Every structure is written in C-alpha cells, then in structure tokens.
Length: 259
Image (tube, rainbow, N blue to C red; front, side, top):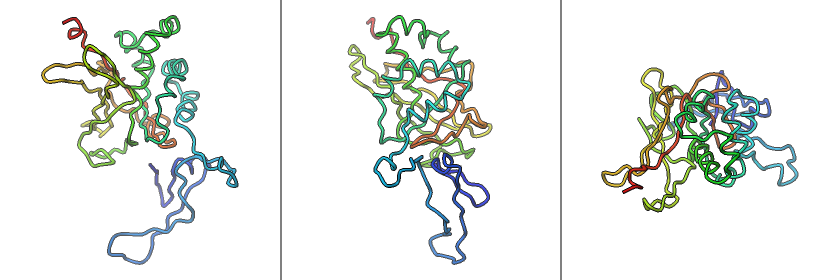
C-alpha cells in the first residue's frame, strides 16, 4: 500500500523516515503502458539504520505497529483489552502475513460489552480462563488476515476488483459438540452505497440449514470505516489500520448445543 500526491509517493517506510520518492514521467511512449523514473527505492516497511548488519533489515512487527497507534489514540477501551490480552494475541499472529486491523471506537466497544459479547475488563482480570478467552477471541476477530484493504473511496474492493468479498479473521472457533475444531471465522467486506466506505460485517458459519455460529456486530453503528486523519488508512508493516463504527464478533448457537 502506498500514497501518492503531486508526483511524490510514500510507502510506510518512507512515512516513518519522513521521506518521499519523486516520480518523473518517462518521455518515451511504450506499447505496454506509461513508465516512471524514481529518484530512489520505495521503502515498504520501516527499517533500522544498521545497514551493515542483518538486524538493519528487520521490518517492524504488527504488534508494535498496533501498540504504537493505540498509545496515541482515543480508542482507550480497545487499548485496555489489547494490553490485557497481548500475550495470547501475539502468539496467534502470522509474521509473514498481511493484515487489515479494525479498531472499534469506545462507544462501539461499550455496546459490545452491554450486549454480552465482550466481558468487562474486571471480569477478564478476575477469570483468566473463560473470560480471558472470550476477550482474546473478540480482539482476534478484528485482525483481518491475508490482505491489506485500503479505504480508497472507489466503488470496488482492491486488491481483486470485487463488489464484495469474504475473508478470514485471526479468530479460530472450537466447539466439539458442533464438530468445530479451529474453524475459520469470516467477515464480509463491502462498500457503503453513499461514499463507498469500507464496511466489515461478521459472517455466519453454517452447515446445511443450520447456523452453527452467528456473526455479530453493532446495531447502533454503521459497521463502516471512520474516515479522517489517524482514523483510516493508517499504514504499517504488511498492514493497514482503520477505526470502525462497529465491532466484529462471533456467537455459538446455544440452541444447537442444548439439542
């Protein structure tokens, strides 16, 4: 993911270094498209400044990227849960994968707590087994794995040029009574009809005519990315981060468990 303006281009490494790459349009007309000359290499990930050692080429981690964002943001409720669940979350992250990270607002986090989808932080701290597992599941559901999805204002979803797309989260679901063992969870991605804002909604997990797991979200928010500085398209190593007017979580169908 890069950003471009007035013949200057930046990837996340250039942004971190307060640097940019200048593009000069080539004067030759080629049959297979327009070419540009760059005055330096694009830096896609923040680098340390020790070019003479292998450590100098290690890119930043997803955990550090999200932590740095939360330390400076107003998403204090998400940060509280992130900090509490950090050890478990870090263990589930694939360091070679791409991620789209969703950060619900304080209002939407409170809605999830009030609806019973997320235990209070006091309950998590008092029960580091069951309630902590629920909190970790909630946080992992907001880590979309596999692609970097920018909120670009276009009417299609890129990469891929889709009208809508279904992709996986980092949350895995296990429920032996429903024959679910580390089952993948999914979100449906679409664009809002008004301003083409990215929309993320948890998808049900079905088997035949039965819904095994319900995809849950906000009934008060839009489930859309919140646009604006430090809210959307925050670029990181192999990742992009968006604030979300909603939340993503999954609920086992308790009716099937009682049958």
